[in-house]
Length: 95
Image (spheres, rainbow, N blue to C red):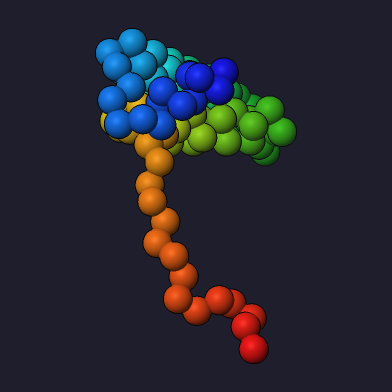
């Protein structure tokens, strides 16, 4: 697992990582669509009712999987690239 993460953090992760990460993004977008479809059908059933815990969970799942799916699909393995953090010139809480 550590070797896979090191490979993703490098500059050129390779075509296999591109396919795997972007496929995971597509799968998450599919999960988002399925959760949104189920939620739409559940909310519009008669008689009208207040939202249940299952419906709120489905809504949260749709939002989270949609955001993460677009990030993985759009950026790919570059999402895991290490970014250098500049050093701080003033330390917080220093005397």
